[in-house]
Length: 254
Image (cartoon, rainbow, N blue to C red; front, side, top):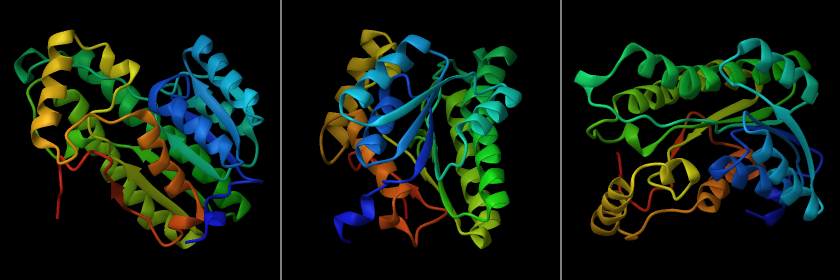
């Protein structure tokens, strides 16, 4: 595939979770590929830092301070962004508790951000694309947690599994409109979110990756962002309803 297939010049992308981690890496890379990037996140300080990274490199970025769990604010932000071509719904949170210790508020909070936030963004961007009769690419953020079970991951895994089903269902519904919908399911990635786990958990995760992942290490945000770029670009023009797994080879589902 010619490198021109990755050129997003003239296109506009909306990225949630853009204040740091995978979301920031995605926003910066899409801007480097030529897209005008609309960066959304609750963390306004982090958003400004992302904006500075993009503009310092000669890219175009716009900021949208946003709580993705608020449907009305998502609708307003998407409307303010104007004609969009790409959505990368990256915003997410982690929570750890055993099934027996999981409280309603834990489940509700994780589902609100990790599933409803993705649903709202997909709905609003898809509606604008359908109304314009324009093709587009929606990219959701799943997780390697959908391929394996682990203690303490009920809320997170359930929400990410719901994202996978949302992705596949949307792909069937939006395909006739020329809109592609795919998910990225990263393995353990070194981000501010994973760094918030205590040192014992981080050490255990890195030791596990070194032992069971064929590549023998954890991943970096840029490595996930390049997967998002592939799905956003014409290089993946015949791909929809797929789950791409930048995970070091730790899971190889049939």
